[in-house]
Length: 193
Image (cartoon, rainbow, N blue to C red; front, side, top):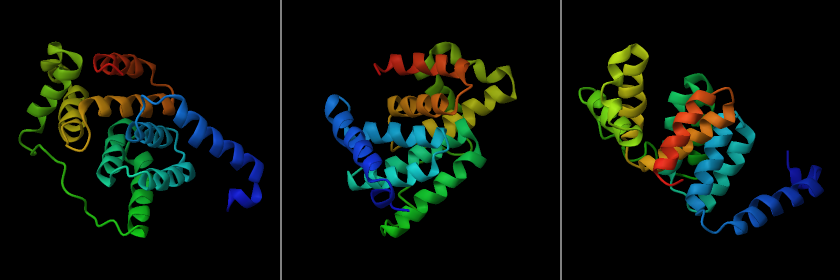
C-alpha cells in the first residue's frame, strides 16, 4: 500500500518530521548512527514494515550493508532467533532487490576455540575487570561471554561503542528489560554516548 496515496496528510507530516526536522535538529548525530539506532529500535519493537522502509532509506543514504547486517546479527542475542529471523530475511530480500552481493565480506574475528576468551576481553573492556571471572558463575554467564560477546561484539563492522548503542535500542524497544538497560546505560556512558 502506498501511504502517499492513501494517507497523504499523514505521510507529508511524518516525512517532514522524521527526515527534515529531526535530521536537522541535532547535527552531532551522523547519518550512520541515526540509522543504526532507528533500525535497531525497529527490530526491538518488531516493526517489520517500518524496518523495510527505513532499510531502503539507510541504503539510499549510503549506510554500508555490512553495518546493517551487523545490527541484525547482534539482535539475535537480545531478541532471540525467532524475533530476529524476519529482519534477516527482510534485509536479504532488500539486498537482493538492490543487487548487493551476498554473503558479505566476513566480519568474524574469533574461532570456535577462542570465542570465550575474546568475549571475556570484550566484556571487561566495556563493563570492567570484574567481568573476567563472571563467565564462571553459570551457564548463562558463559553463554553471554562466548556467544553474545565472543561471537557478536568482537566482530568487525561496528565499534564496541556502536554495539553498546544498538544493544540499548534493542532492549528499550522491546520493553521489560530494565535491569539490562541499567547495565547497558552504564556501558554507553563509558563510551560517552
